[in-house]
Image (tube, rainbow, N blue to C red; front, side, top):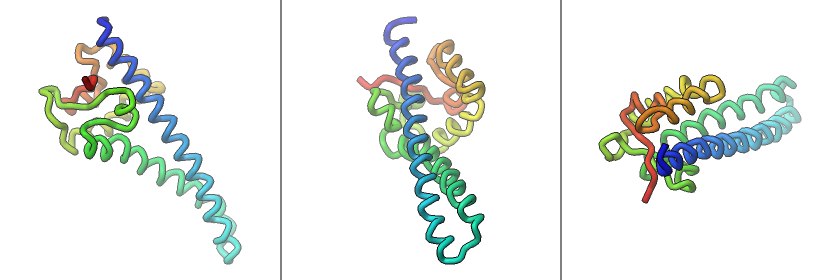
Length: 149
């Protein structure tokens, strides 16, 4: 593997780790928020089950919306880069070098269900062995991750 290709592969792996860490922090903060929101509701007479489902509901909502924001909306509105991609000098383009559509980002995200199998091993292996270093979501959406020069 050439140095530039190795750099892209390693940066993509780091990008995934950084974004996962950021989403975990958001999930923990939302759990705290859910607990803090449920306490006043219980004092106002809400059933005690609120203390169980309110934190869970906030974690699920924040996690789901956070993933949609990071994987679809943010790169769509910021030149093809997620926050971690910006830090690592990467961006998503179409195979021909153009800007991906919102649909392309959505397809990439949907196929993360396959790429994320076996703790992300499926996507990691595909990135390492495909000629353009694409995971399945990239191949189907017609996108590629490139270094920003």
